[in-house]
Image 1 (cartoon, rainbow, N blue to C red):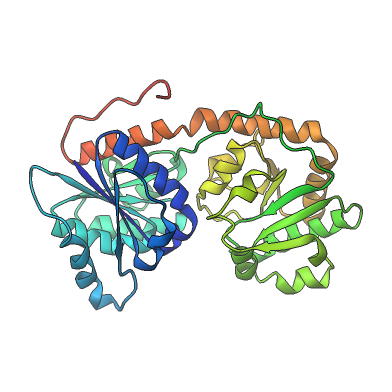
Image 2: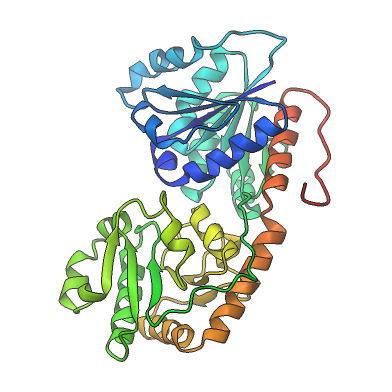
Length: 362
């Protein structure tokens, strides 16, 4: 059996780490796995044994979409002996994935990882008369899909899987602590509250540095504020922070101001590595609405300052929160369970008997 993981530009920019892990898991399970990326992104995908990587033209006027889909489909044969699934990651890939699936007589699966992608998924599935499947990483997004008109049988929850490090390994003890500031940047007022909170803390102590996601800073429009309140000396803007996230995994604290219903695996990775997270509550993201594994704030700058300063000052509290988060991610976001859920969905779409989810990690 064959699966084509067709990834849009935005998802490629942030989530190649996740796509790579999915590819490895599917190959290990015996699936012929192809990853299709925007053609100028191919150098960013490290070789994975058994995974074929191809490029496609993701940009163009609407009337060229069928032609661009044909360029993908022509690289593969159509055979009843090699049933195929086309799995689209990122809502901007939904349209071209639909065309490729039709050309290859393949099953269509849409990864709905954000509330903003729900309506686009609904439109595609309605056009396909229920022939596709929408999968989402949490129950609230599945419910949103069903409420918007997707049949119950065509919406399925499959939480993402990430690899946890051994939390018993001690984090580095340094005189200067690292704070990561990341998110979508889509809610400027929430970003302003977090940044003003950081400035309040910086007025009382300077034993920390801030590593900020450059793209999120630009999108939130916080450049001028950062300069005007004197935070610049402590803040470094890091390009491609989500894609190259080693700095995040070695930080002490992560700040996540947004709550726009979008899942990003960087939050799961940080928690899996024992990073203490402070965030605005997001009911569409389970890891960001559980006060036992994240310090949740309402959005007031003074509350941000209090939460940040409390974790900076108390190493024990910081480590305990990181440990609880690590244990939760290790239990609920196992890579093997993610892969088993995908294979179950793929085989159901292809009309084969579904496989049982494993009780224990393989």
